[in-house]
Image (cartoon, rainbow, N blue to C red; front, side, top):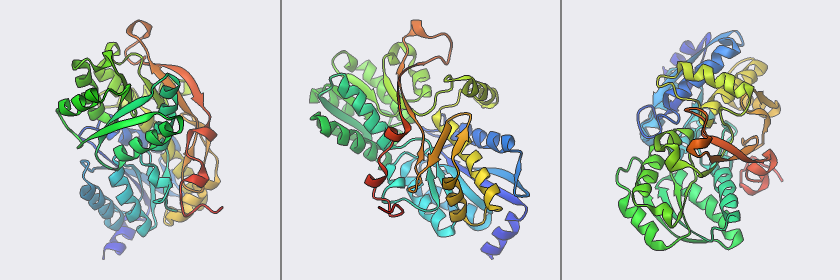
Length: 389
């Protein structure tokens, strides 16, 4: 009866599910903010598409793969969800991607990091929107190598995302002869990083690279500060967002280099949207790149549904998404490749010193722009079976 129930519940309504960490270490970076971003996209689109009302559901995967898979199956089997968005935690994104493909619906990994989503695990039902580990790992590695870093030690989140991020940085470092002296791995939500930091310190590496995210990045960098590691070694946060900077404070975070595809204070359009977002966010946080990714991805998905005429056939909707140029006020103009990779520029920013900041969320200054065609892995290097040579 489940398929019949899903069809009955789906009649007249298109449901979008935002699946992420609503209560743990990634909740500020995605969480309620991603749900709000999807709701804003639906409102800005007009609230309906192809003659059907649009609803947004929320699911908390608690950074547990089985929990995320269970929610996804329930949504697709019995609740008429046609698109699942966000998916921070790459292990969960990879699992949900398989489930979505089996159900012929759509997954947009706007919060997921692993570049496997457009590589060996690419799918005709998946689009990877905001960023990926290749873009962050290679982009930041190039920047710090140009600053003279010759050796690196990693502190890495021990699951698909962290491991992939470490690999991408290491691949770029190898091109210049920069040495990787070791890696200390940790579970999500670790409170005490002292033993890992001591390993990094004793390695003698020029730089310590933190291949983690969310609260883990904040906590590990805070403890690195307490150990005064920055006096002898560069600290590199491979995934560092404005919430990390806010938690650390500009005094501690100043000078840090980071690569992101969106910053709220880039232009009039991003500032206007960010102010709307901040006013409605439960904690009044400014949007980060992943929140922006949910918004723009949801808009483009709805444009594709309108073109196809319904949301039933996920492959048809993704094909329509790829066929149409992307264009929205947050990322500007772009495209989606055959492997599902959304293409747009990336930006190298530096965290401002306290005396350079003009307000509570004025954190970054632009260093350089990475053109869209250079920002992501070349299409023919990912190993995606959808790509024909």
